[in-house]
Length: 410
Image (cartoon, rainbow, N blue to C red; front, top):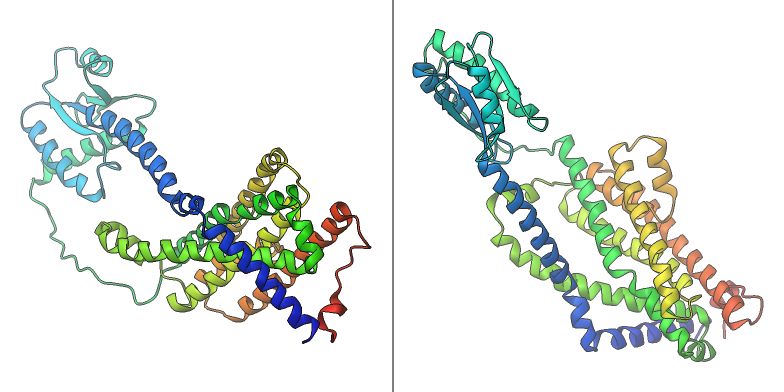
């Protein structure tokens, strides 16, 4: 058997060992259901923020000091104008009309200062020249009251009945619009960032733990160090793949239970090259992003000798991932600029940018080149990690990566 074949067999042995040692443990269940814990905390925070916001929104009001027929007409116009808002969060506060007092200015000021209800804006005076008081955070509410006065006055002069009756027909686009391509691209970048942030960090702790208890040195004595590093990288990727299959299956079933609006929004994220090819490329770029970051973390973790050092390394590792996400997201918004060129070529950001680019452009050949380029850098990062571990930890030999030995005959 050639040395390359022996290296592959030894690599797969190490990968199988790490995969079994990780999966067949009780703690793996905690890792597998980590998104549930993260989602629970996010849901609790979101519900709390929504309760605080909606609680303030329910009490908030805009007030118009008008009387008689103008008050009734303004309520009708207000109901008509609110149809253009998609939900209650975007709509102005609820309108209340009141009879104006002798001193309308003082009455308007008193409405703003009322502690029983939060009044965002008050309009008083004749509708030809209305006076509008609004709080610093209610500029839009003030603008809405001004427009409401204008439309009420027009309706009063032209009549209440609408002057036109539109027939609305809902149709679906046959081609994705440009904005959807950018949204799909950002979604792809964020998905790869979230998955690598959640999954790639386990490489650091695993190799540092085995370095601390001398297991990795025993492995290095039995098989080539290249097989150890590649095997650990493949083993942890197998764990990540199991994680994706598990949650992908669940999400595919839960998707049918989503609200219609959310399901329609996700369905509208149509990539330019079609969903089947985009799914294949997305998986390829996730694999490359995991392998690249995993190779870097493998080399860094191999230099750590304690849990404390791993904790110190966690911050720069997270910063690397966040910076790559930011670089990819910004470059996707300007795909023809110099920043996009840098993101495409730089190995750590290349999977992020190219995954987003796959959602925007139907061209296939750039992805073939990009995947080949990223594969080369995975090998380079592993070679550098092996060299650093051999020289810095094992302190043996020159630490050269034996490329000729891989392809020679035994």
